[in-house]
Image 1 (tube, rainbow, N blue to C red):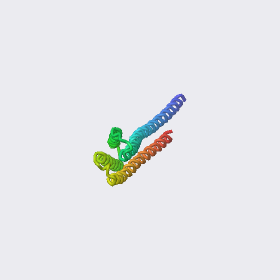
Image 2 (image 1 turned 90 degrees about the vertical axis):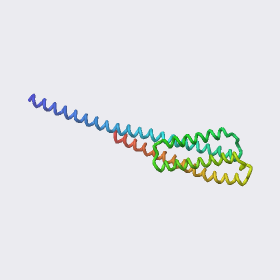
Image 3 (image 1 turned 180 degrees about the vertical axis):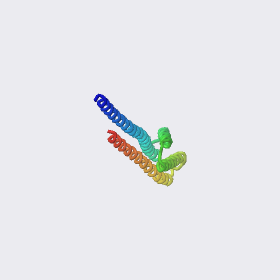
Image 4 (image 1 turned 30 degrees about the horizontal axis):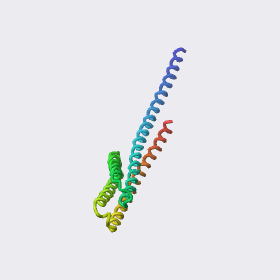
Length: 179
């Protein structure tokens, strides 16, 4: 009888031990999934933050660009600092892990920005500002590229926002399944 009690205790201990090992393994995999989700959230949040910064800087640059062309402001240092800020942000966003369509959008943003900047600088350095027809043509060209720049930046911003939202939903799902 003492032998059967030992065997029963040993089988019970093995069953509890097996259950604990199984629960620990499931918890480990669940925590690993949650950790990966959180890491992805951080990556996408950083991407979103950088794209949002580019969006804000681009809008500010375009406002100052319009005021500069119209002659409402004369502060070239502020304009140049904004242009440098936008250039840096474009380069930094380009260093992030972007999908191919996002890279294409970023190239559109860069080319529209460069076109606007070069034409504005050319207009400020030439006599176009004294010629009404020249300034009207410049406004039309800049407006065309301004809309391209704004639409492209907003598109990139929307993609970054959707990616962050999707990864957050996936992390929430992983957390619930882990619980």
